[in-house]
Structure formats: structure tokens, C-alpha cells
Image 1 (cartoon, one colour):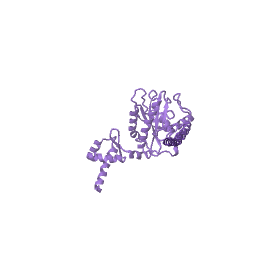
Image 2: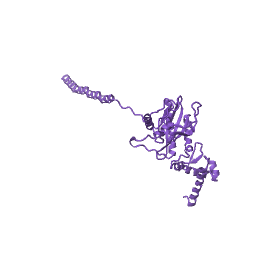
Image 3: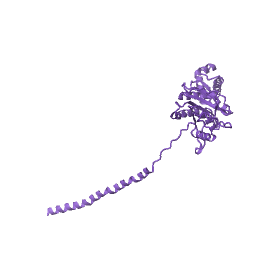
Image 4: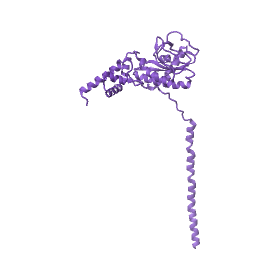
Length: 322
């Protein structure tokens, strides 16, 4: 059993490690933490594991330590967006590796979309730097997501036509936003720029509010309709993981009401048995029953003839004996 003095010492050591992680200008390595605190590596490892289990520290893809989910959730309690870019960066990086296309994180600012983080495409063709470039809400995938989930509002007046495929009718846009909520992601095809295709999914915070959108964009020659479905699934998976870090805990809607949750796969309806098949199943036993009814008849006839033959043989034997 750990003594009171030993327990206090463990808390003090864990607090020293946590302080180093929180005050570091960026992520920090295991070796740097052990050196900064003067703790043995075995002690450092054991305490970091305990802090990680409780959401006080987390590791990035390189194994370096950052403040954990508890700090992120606390910072977001007031609705502040500070630190969102840093928290989201690992998820953007993974999505970029999975798709090879341009990945963006966007929020609403003064009636337009503001891109706050980007991972560049691995391709030369179709690569665009969207950072610092204000784009309309109604003709971008990120903008449609923010509008659909109430995280942005359109400016009054006419909707700008950016290409011949841009939706400029507010009624048609409302129909499109309803489709976004139904499937859980938005798609544009040539609505902002000719040939540009993009997919975006919502990023939630605790309480279920949408605070940002994660997008993948590229030329239509690469983001073909069959590939868009795969890209959307990858985008939804990373957005869902980021939402969990921000404290979102999705609950299934009662009776199927409400917007669809992230990463929810669409159900494919199963084909029902056609009516003729059920009728055929009802008729199928009839020949069998008829066969069963006819089958015993030869046996009964044989049984009826058997005594007659026995009587004839017995009579012939008596006549021979006489």
C-alpha cells in the first residue's frame, strides 16, 4: 500500500511533468521531459502513461507529448477557437496522407469561409493555397457544411455566381443543405471554380455544436464520383476523431430524428422476397402431399393380395395330399 508521503511525492512528480508539457512552446519528447524534471526514465514513463490514460497529456504521430484532451475541452468551454489549429493538425495530416489531396480546416468569419489550416496536395496539378483567401459560403463545401449545421449565416442580398454551376437560388440552396444534413457531408463540383471538386464534413465540439469543417479538394479528373465516396468516408473518420478530442460525444437520435452523426454508414435496403416466390413456397408442398397420399396404395394392394395367395397355396397342398 502506498504511504501518504509516497503518494504525495508521486503527485508532485506527475505535476512537474504536466507543467513541462503545458509550458513547452510545442510538443516535447520523452527524453526532454526526463531531463527537464530529473526523474528516472522508468518513473517518467510510468507517470506519463498515467497522465495519458486520464486525458491530461497526449502523443502525436511522432510520439511527442502535448497537453491532453482535458485541457482542450476546458479551453473550448467558453467557445474560444484558440488552439484549434494545433489540435486539428494531426488529423489534417492523416487525411492528407490518406487522400494525397489538399486538406483544409475552415470556419465562418463575417459571412465568408476562412481557411485556418491546410495540408498541401502531393500533386502539382490542382494544388492551391487557400490560406488567407476568403471564399463564399454558398458555393464551397466547407461553407455548405457550416450553413447546414447552423454554424454560419448567409449575408443578405443576392448569392454571387462564381461559375455557371453555382447555386444562386436560396430555395435551391436550402434543398441542398437538407441533403448535406441527410448524408453528413457536403460536395461541390465546379461551383466555386470550374473543374474543382471538394468534400467537407462537420467538426463538433462538446454539446453538439459545429465549430468548423474539414475538407478535401482537388481537380475533378482525380476526384471522380466513385472516389468522392471514399474520400468522404476518410474525411468523416478524421472529423469524428477530432470532434471527440473537442469533447463531442454523439448520441443516436431518437426515432431517426435530427442530423446524421459523423461516420455513420448509410444502410442499403435489403430486397424483399417477391410475391410469386411466397406463392410458389405455398404450392410446393402440394405434390409432396399428393405423393405421400399415393405412395401407400401399392403397399395396401400388395397386402390385400398376399392373403389370397397364401390361401391358394394351402388349398393346392391339401389336394396333393389327398
